[in-house]
Length: 396
Image 1: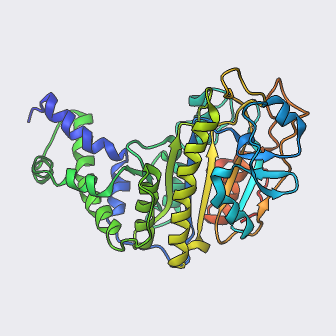
Image 2 (image 1 turned 180 degrees about the vertical axis):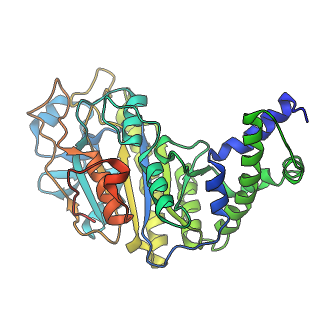
Image 3 (image 1 turned 90 degrees about the vertical axis):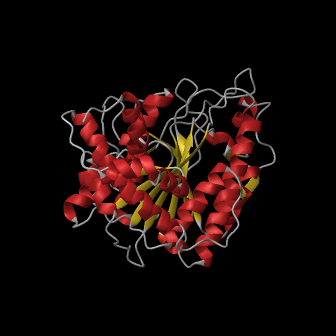
């Protein structure tokens, strides 16, 4: 059979939406629910380089206010005598007060890169700054679990394209934006007829697309059925992130075998008029997380959920001439869960007197954070996944 260009493009539009290898797709059709006490990780990516100094504010530091005379946050919500949180993250303050939030300052890596693309690749792959990897840290986690287990552990990204973080050498996660739309697309007559007919192609790419198409159709149905199995009565905001968290919630409450969920929001690339942009994004995050946590708590699941946030870099200490900030280095990470062993502020605030050409100097390596989550939360061999052997933290 000769495939036409239009046919090729139409097949690839659905088949590549998932961006996974056939073996992994096949595994998702196996209805193996997580154990009731199985830990679940949700990664929330702050895309674009969030300004950490206007997120967690050093309220008693004169250097902060001097270097940011028109963008410093002066109405922060107090976490302690010398630390505040951006008022747009008021629910994070509530979580902090109730012992359900930890935050780590000065997280980064040696020889930081200020390119969005390169630094994001470093965070996704858990590589050194001079090392280029084609697999992500969670993708290698899937590879490791697949090697050890009868069926691989699943991961889902609520997006149109799959991030590097979730691509392994042998296993990849499944990326989709909306379970219902994915299902409806997969049920179109055109795709069903292709799937039901036996196709043989000498062209390797076309053959792969047909295989992936068939698996995607199977799993679109599977994900859609799971997503509507236990509809949430919790109200969620109508924002993109609110809808994404609602999708994740519906899947968590079903018996889908998924241990990792990946979400993102942005852009935090605030070179101009930073405060307005950051406030808007923080408002969306605050409201979506508030609904999600309430949903998890009402279903008795919050102790087994860990929500982790990160951004590819922070911003420079001094503001620029456009009431914004430029690309920097170290940043903070948030950890939200009912199962934290250490709560609150885990380490010292950034040292604004000791800078590297105007940039913060990292004190905590993000790969140590990943190693902690892999070992203590996901029960995986962090040394095999990351090659990291420099210890772990004890906040989970």
